[in-house]
Amino acid sequence: MSAHTKTSYVISHKIARNSKRFSDGEFIKECSLDSAELICLEKKEAFENVPLSRRTVTRRTGDIARNLELQLQHRAVNFDLFSLSLDESCDEVLCKSVLKINHVVDVVTKIVNFIRARALNHRQFVALLEENETLHHDLGYHTAVRWLSLGEMLKSVWDLREEIQDFCVKEGNGIPQLSDADWIADLGFAVDVTALMTELNVKLQCKGLFVHEMYNLVKAFMRKVAASLKPNGGQHSHPLANTEGSRTFS
Image 1: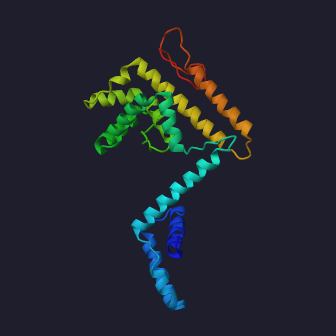
Image 2: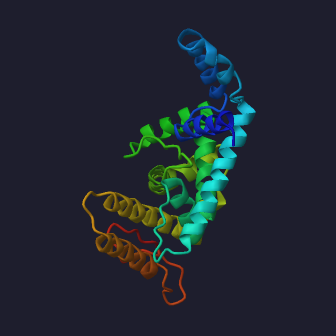
Image 3: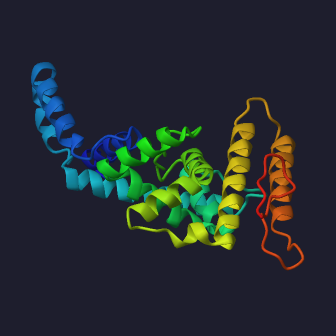
């Protein structure tokens, strides 16, 4: 590998590690040429031969990523233990899939979008809440990468489900799930389990925790969720009826 090519890889690696745009390579080259002209004019041609176009930086970054993956695969053969770390967006996708609450989240998102995405609907809904003097005065949006915002959105829809149903029917957009006892039970479960998940996330982020302590926290969370999924005499009731702060259905 020539010095020019190696330099191209080194600079591309720094661009990628610092989350810079691939096109920044062209700016770096321009700065290098100006510097060479002032400091070492005889070396300017060498800098000119360093490929740093956007496409080149893109290819170099891909090459580096594949090389790192191969190194990891080679070293992983000798690993005894693995530690898997997921960011919050991955945690959310996995939990919704495993807990099978997508049918709840999809409907709740549709409800919130119907009310919040249209300015007139939103103003009318807020006015209805103020008229009824409810504890909640609005619905919050859910950002797709934040588990906490999902829990807050589910909780607000749970607390305002009757007002939401009345409003949607009045606007000619009734939500049949809000009249379905089974779906309402699933909504209650989703509210509680997201609250437990948020609580777990907060506890796991505490400083100074040992691995066995984190393991115990996760196991305790799993026991709570597992207990909530046990059948109740063949009846579909609120899954977390025996946990603190749970809701019941008639």
